[in-house]
Image (cartoon, rainbow, N blue to C red; front, side):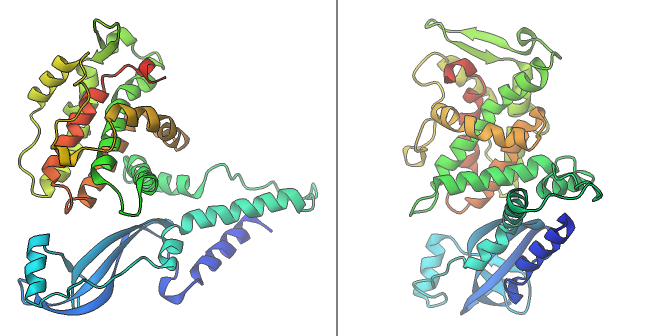
Length: 376
């Protein structure tokens, strides 16, 4: 069977899974508001509302990610919605019988997962078919045309198409993939501990700032290690790295972790941002002490592990995602900046965005300075 025929067969299988979820070849995020119950409350504009479950599916030709966004108040007869009130207001509205108590249960359906990850199903179908053909298929006659080059995956082709209009398409798409994998890996029966998710991504983001310089500039011979970094040595013989070049992806460049996360926090209404001069002074003074690399956040918002342990455990399994998907090393920190944007936005109702921003920088700055040799 020719690869083109395989493609249309796979698409047909996915698109006929259910009429309501017919597969569409498109790009971007698609929201679905699933009605749960009529409510008595109206919007500030006097619009009638109903309680709904918001589901967002991200498409790149086919589905690559599905996200459960929880409850919203959707506009009857329209496409818009309003976020749910905070816990205090919600309880008051439930007491006034404006909203149901308890809120009706909901969950993602099996078809949501199928359509949300249909790209991977498609890749799996192609892979199984190719394996089957190689194992059991008859040898092709020499008169047949050569096979189509299949080295580039559908996702890679989708990324390249996006890059024609958006030079940052690759970091954005890979950021979503990393967030998806981290959420899946950290989830338990209670969900995902947002502080641990943010701290782990920030730790890798900070460390990636140094590693991007090593991989993209030092390793390629564009600059020496001595020119790239200032070395700080402690009494116990350990080395730490600093310098203006290292500060750029952390907080001074246009696409730094500080700029990317700060932009999202500002859009969410945040006004109190981390004082980078004070933070840099604290990190410098704590080098070589047991306080180095420990974020100064309230005890009830601490992550499940220390940033240095997240780097030790997660960098070896995250680096291949960046390398295998051809992310330019200079854009490694940008990937984590985009990933943190998503998580801060996702967790805004659980963790104050201003505190999340502080957590990011308190973690990223010291992790950008650690010696890679100390991780082994």
